[in-house]
Image (tube, rainbow, N blue to C red; front, side, top):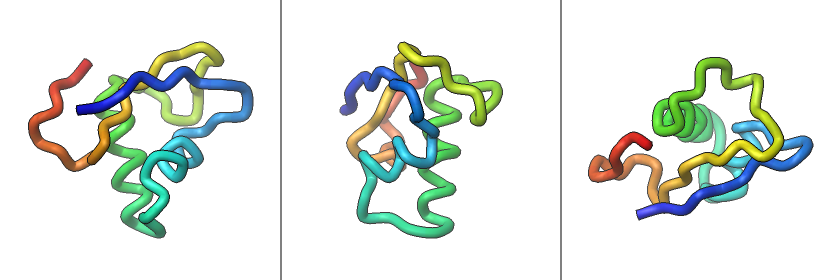
Length: 68
């Protein structure tokens, strides 16, 4: 289960992960960022486009989530 999130000016994958998974810190956060990269087929995690839509899962470790 998840939602679509639209990237806005100033967004970075790290801040998006913190916004949706605010209970995590440190290496756990890096794992969530990598999950967002994988789920959204992101080639360069440092380059998000304003208006780009990202799939955000309720639990980024959910094995039942299909790639978008």
